[in-house]
Image (cartoon, rainbow, N blue to C red; front, side, top):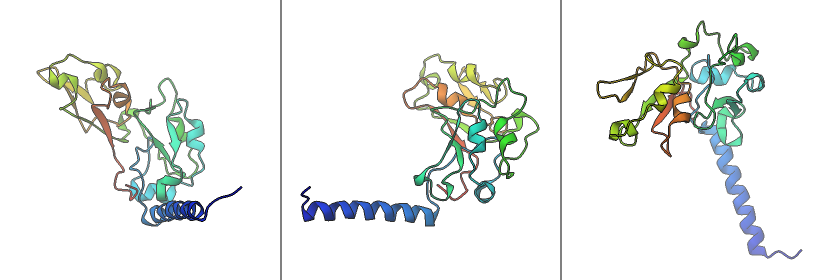
Length: 195
């Protein structure tokens, strides 16, 4: 195998550059802002309490939970939900929220009722939402597990979110029919120092 000095040094530069970016993200805590599982403790307390065992991921009956990988900074190994791909279905038809029951460290605290979960709050982009642009669409309302409380319609039949009732499960985000979802969930723990 004959490799030129320029290609070898260029490859070393890419490796070192990528490694320094990874190390920098670990040290600074930068990484993706996380939509955490139901019952997640607040911000940095969650990161300190989660032992990164993955038992919550294993227990999730819908495969909603994923673990952050190398790009997660200080959040590496902790669970999160990518709502547009697979939202949290709040363990529909289950007797409990399985992720909370599986958590051995207390990073996920018990929630007395599914309506008390606070993963985040859905936000509607009025510029791209069909209902705000003259097209009848009821998809987000139909899929909301708390329709009529978390997601309601205004007098002009446009969806609105009640932030006090929205649990942030992301079911509406996943179901939205616009190519880039017109409804997204802002994570409750966005102040945890990973975003």
